[in-house]
Length: 463
Image: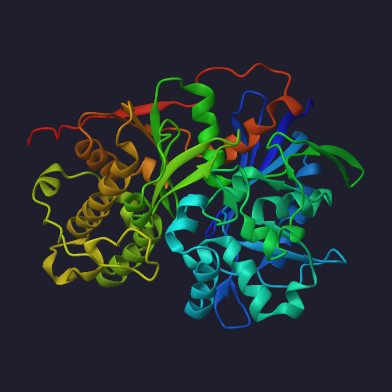
């Protein structure tokens, strides 16, 4: 039996941890998904169980290496950002992987911005709103001043994608996509670490910055394999699109966050855009990508739980709901009042959380309203990064790309654009594979790795 040459990709989200094997034509020939229970940090705040995650990586690699169907040539990683794994001088993880939603001490935040020129200046220089713990560099600043005895023991502070690579390779690296995602670490004007990183002695905790296409040879269970150094998942999700399409486009990458990424918008971030949660990511080529974010996937998850409890259905009942165009035409309007959430910069939540479920006849009607309320926010968020560009196409990947109600409403919200759902929704994993294509795959990259479904902006007439 001839083994299929494959690349192994770990795509690690906050909720779902996924494994994919891609063949040389980038077909998915194996996939697995699981959820790992969270633990509590020393303050009782929920966080990733990094030890459980590490053990899962090692065990699954061992199992797949011994699978007679596949010949694993390489491995790479995409993972969520804004969280550090801290490794001490013995090479062991010794602190929690703190949750980026953990509230940040206001007095310490004030001390930082007072010392380094104020919130507006830092936000513009680092191309990121002020987001507390979501600015991952601030987590290191907090450790230095709240727990200096632990800070002094850090040998490496890895963003999660690079830690996952380190688990297998024991090779320390930093990648530009992880530094360049609302971390407050990178000065986008000077293309280097911000001066506060050096002044606070934090750069000493970082491994060298290496190109995203870096390949690291390693031995696992007597097998010689190549590994990438990992990428931030939002930047990885763009790679298949940049490799496939030349006309200007915007990508809405959906998961826990719905992130609107415009690689063709190069205008500097304004104070107003920063205030509304716009930021810049760095692409795998080190180029700035203007983006806006919405916590839509998280809101969807919380609200479908609420719907399931109220209407006494299963959690995933929403998957059975088909678009009802009469319901969509009679959607309740949204309230224009602002409903801020606990992060000041984050785009406000939709109106649905405050709606009375008694007002809906059934689950289907309520669910249509939920998606309509989310879409009201999505339209505003995506619109922020469309301004002043020649973009005419909108692509959607991730969870919402397979939601026909979301896609229909998105097309209606942007009637002057071509709106497509990606039929290969695993763009982050695919991007991580493509980032090291030439390291393991001798085949030429074929067109058509992304298949698209066009949605019309018009609702069909009623029967």
